[in-house]
Length: 260
Image 1 (cartoon, helix red, strand yellow):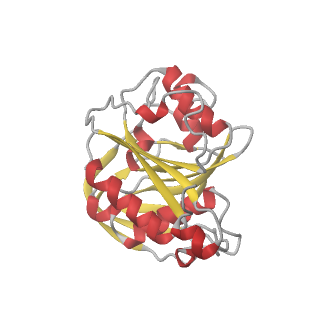
Image 2 (tube, helix red, strand yellow):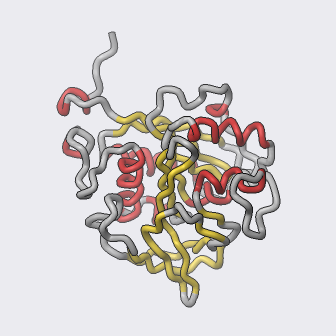
């Protein structure tokens, strides 16, 4: 019999099991996979398993997506891939089936620009093939501006995810556009870059099971990904997606950093 984890020993609570899917174009994913894993695990009772692709193209595929039950055993999937030119609807549908089935998702940065299976430059129609990935995200984004600092302001300070978080300004980062924000999405933070302002963090409920989805478009550069303010936001989003943060913003017993 394998020994229980250190988190179980002290808290008596089984850690959440998260799958971090990371790789593809345009980012230092080799470094960021380790930054995210260490940052999340130090902040919450979560064990992060990494599924990394060294393919740095826009067509990166991930071995962990093979099989219909690819998400079995995970409490949450963190999407941090950048595979804009994967257009195989069967491949994308297999990913989405896990979330339709109730597995929560956390989507980071370029995950918003993945799996563009159809026409995406204009607002897509919910439920259409063009909208496959956006229907899960709850927001449609197609591009970004230059790398400049982003002023991050929390617009729903009472939400469990953002409770206790303070506004901040990033280093040079990419501000993603908002082609449309779905009616059911709940904006948590807006980012302002000169005169441009968009939603940069939000929650959504996906499909008939109303699977919890948390997303942020922030996180291009390593310094931002390693920033305590970013990691706090991502970790709280993950805990919310898994139902481990109450309406009062407090982490459920046994799931905070102190549980380890």
